[in-house]
Amino acid sequence: MFRPLFVFIGARYTRAKRRNHFVSFISLTSMIGLALGVIVMIVVLSVMNGFDHEMRTRVLGMVPHATIESPQPIDDWSVLAQKVRQNPQVLAVAPFTQMQGLLTNDGKVQKILLNGIDPAQERNVSIIDSFVKQGKLDDLKPGDFGIMIGDKAATKLGVGLGDKVTFVAPEVTVTPAGMFPRMKRFTVVGTFHVGAGEIDGYVGLTNLEDMGRLHRWKPGQVQGIRLKFADLFQAPRIAWQLAQQLGEHEYYARDWTRSHGNLYQAIGMEKSMIGLLLLLIVAVAAFNIISTLVMVVNDKRGDIAILRTLGSTPGQIMRIFMVQGTVIGVVGTAIGAGLGMLAALNVSAAIALLERLIGHKFLSSDVYFIDYLPSQLQAHDVYMVCGAALLLSFLATLYPAWRAARTQPAEALRYE
Picture 1 (cartoon, rainbow, N blue to C red):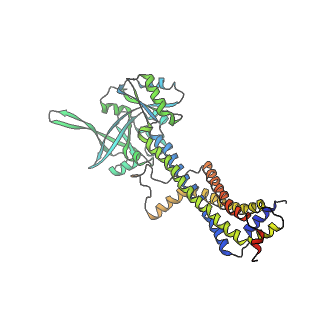
Picture 2 (cartoon, rainbow, N blue to C red):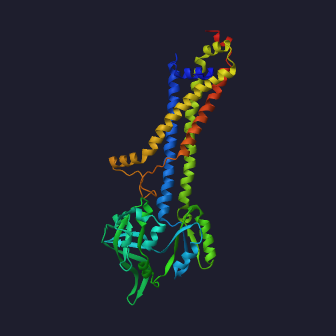
Picture 3 (cartoon, rainbow, N blue to C red):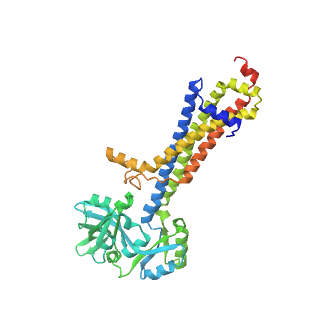
């Protein structure tokens, strides 16, 4: 098969055993360093993608994309929902009523954000059904004052299915005997585990009608409606527009960027900065090729001189060593890409196994918004990392190849 002379000689130099074994060792370490840099970049970017994905699907699947609320209780939420659904970006609407307070049981206290929901409507805007561990959402029946809490809150309070907990509202009731906090007994009818500490520990669900009674509202009144959008990044703009259309002084909008926007932006910024820092590691490994090829050029001065006397041009000599350096970059990048993809696909399971073996949690839900290490391999990240590694490897070959092309035959053969 026909191959250009510079490709044949450059590939042969890569395979051949050199007299100077140190040069071979440096070449091998350059290849290994480049492969390790590619592995680390692919794994870390996949983990950051995993955090981004879990933030979107889990946390933002439980947190409303946006809400339309009113300073006063809304009497007929279905009419309001019908108007909102006319916007093509709105996929689903569900009513809600909230109240912050405390849950107590046997001297244990846990702060809670209690959400009154309609189980049938809530499924359209929330992914809670996918994370129910005990009981089911339909057990939140009106009049029963049932409550569903996260497993983290249940563990802290020491309660399970069928146990009673007391909800303490941030209001007081005035009686002839004095002022007393408003309290209501709830029955635990289910638990859920989303994997996000702030949800599993501080969010509770109860029936919409029961929450209205706790507020002492009329039957059917709600605090607002929860919206699910086709594109959650459009939620701030569209929710504000909907509130303006419904009545600027009657309704106001809230969206997920107020509660979790900073966290989501931090994840994106961290991915960019970490990717840049890791690219410097790849650059260091790639530019080790410079030292390798410089030593190869010194080792092959005699061969270069002979090729020049046989008629090879400086350009051909330059391409020979560019081929050799490029081969080192391609092999190192290919090995790194293969091992990096394998590691990225299995890092979550490996970390979970390590946590079970040593009995220690690396990601605590008390500190992080999820309690496990996610990973999502994306093709464009692999292409970007491999492209950057190959480009840096190619650039690293230019100076040594240019130096080889400047070798003078007479000067190189003087002491041969």
